[in-house]
Image (cartoon, rainbow, N blue to C red):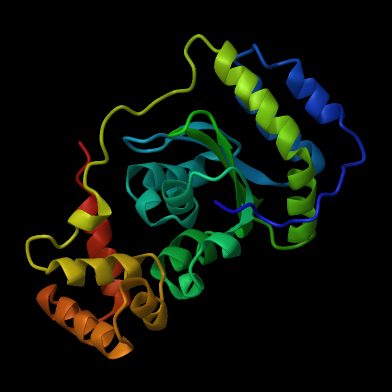
Amino acid sequence: MHEPRHAAKPPASLAPVAKLAGLVRSPDFLDGLGEVLAAYFPGISYAAFHFSAQGRPAILAHNLDATRHQRVLIPYIERMYLLDPIFQHWERHRARGVWSLDELAPAGFRDSDYFATYYRELGLHDEAGAFFPLTEQDCLSLSFGFYRPLATPAPDDVLAVLTYLFPLLESLIGQFWLASSLHLPRVDDQAPSQLHDFGRDVLSDRERDVAWLILRGYSSPEIARQLGITQGTVKNHRKRLYSRLNISSQGELFRQFMLFQQPLS
């Protein structure tokens, strides 16, 4: 496992963290965690999730308005977390720390339909994530960014302050976990359909592997490196899977995935 390499920058005051420490045995702790972010970075938007070994992520706390809650958080926990670089990073590495989105996402992520739908269209800027492990399999994941592109702090400054605060926040979150009689909310049901199940009836295993990487924003050269095949072979797999799914573009692939994940009740 590797640690992110951000310079640590102390904030002007530790008073917000001291206030959070007073809530470690309170049900208001999770909202207080968001208040720490808002105190240091006015205008920041955040969501705290419980990532567990099984089931979908659970929303623990957030400060999004009702519209963004419906447009961002609900689709995320129902199905879109499967494509999320932040969730995928925890699944693969189980590594504590703070990362920017660009550190976690594949190089082609900004050209993906996922990015167009959940970042460009909704106006989210400078997203980053922090992982606070609770057990070997569980963590509290904190995602944060800005929905206003103007008059926001430099992304490196946000990451530097949170890198400095990370050990303090990790300790407080750990104490909250131990002190809470209910622990964190869990989602016990399994994900309604896993990403690898998409296209199972019509695609070969390798075609589904390629489709999975396309959906997550990997470019053809990256797919070739991930699977140990040539770019020409990637092109052939892409052509065949598009034909089998009766589609002609990455956008249509994304929409078919959305429809595949839709039945949740």
